[in-house]
Length: 542
Image (cartoon, rainbow, N blue to C red):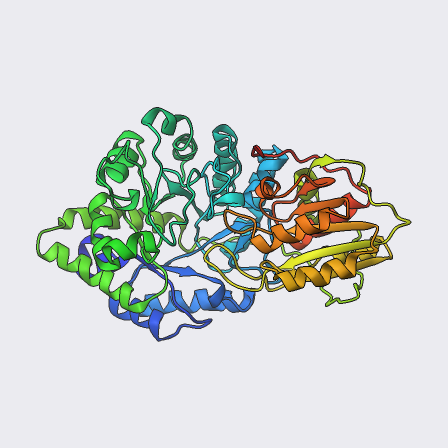
């Protein structure tokens, strides 16, 4: 690795940037960033992934390009949090449970086990950094961006699971990234869309928001990601944490003693880009104490951020010593993590999927592969029966009508899966008479009327709800309320447990925290009485 003193100013500043691009190959955008601007980091999204093999080749191609350009090894990252946030969901990558499902088990050993599995698999496809775990304490039911990405609302539990995940990832040579500092859990606005404030006093922040980060630092976490959130008790000026010297240097570096990499959340998010612009925000983030600047999407913004930082050094706004220290931390990390390899990859079998109108069965027998056994065990320990007025288990002599919401549109907090398995498909393997009506997550009133007519003679009705933001969509609320007038409903919250707060009390209410194939298969056994789940709510439904 080239000595730090041999790098030009442009090469040093390039190391401070982590950039995304839009292809499944090394396109003009990422090629220019690596060859001309010496960027030190790359972030993958779903748009970059066709298969695990393709992504492995892409990682090798990008590293080779950096080497040919005389650059340092790249820091390649991804948001592979588990559960509902998984950029790589193709065959060959285990779909480990998300944080709230793990929190519902009450067992941090499961979190450690999942992080070890995921860490091995990421390392084997050339990824060195996972932008996980989320250690935000989700104590706001209306939080539109964290939700099930959190382990729950209790700081001590979040800290314990966070440390387990950090330990698991880093034991496999993957840098863990605790996020979003100082805490994004008690917010009701998505920082992708606007500015957010957490108004609590310092004593409350210490007991709640900051505790998981202190434990992560004690555990030796490699990186911490900032939040685009204002904390007036720490920074009295109306400045988000990402751009605050008092938050990043005063609190995180000096007071809390963090010596690893401080990485910003993406500067193209509207909480930053609208009031400041990406280029100016990049300079301010470096001034505040950030080491690694994340600009995920637009080449124009990426180049502007690079050039703005270089210009800030040349004009004396930023000391070159500040850049030197940041690059030194990044190079220390690269010596430790980049290029490590593991000897083997544990892959799950491909999930079987079947398109169904009249529902056809899938294989819902209990698994035998090691990773599948782990997922089955954790799902059994996470699924939570909140209450049951005698509707569960299902009566095998009566037919079942399932209403299943499908995610078909990408948002900032949600993405359609490349492979799915509906509850009706899984139940049909265990119960013969299963009818299923698939809806979007935003059903229309006309669609509700058709369902009401179709379901009228059904004896057992299951409504699955799905919320990826702060509120259960109005169409789903309307559907549940209409159905409840004539049916005793079994309502299953496929993602957000807080859905119960926005509907009348159903006959039975079950939380799964995610709709991954492993969870759906286990859920079918729970509903039919083959399994007794042991999950406990990691949040209060108040």
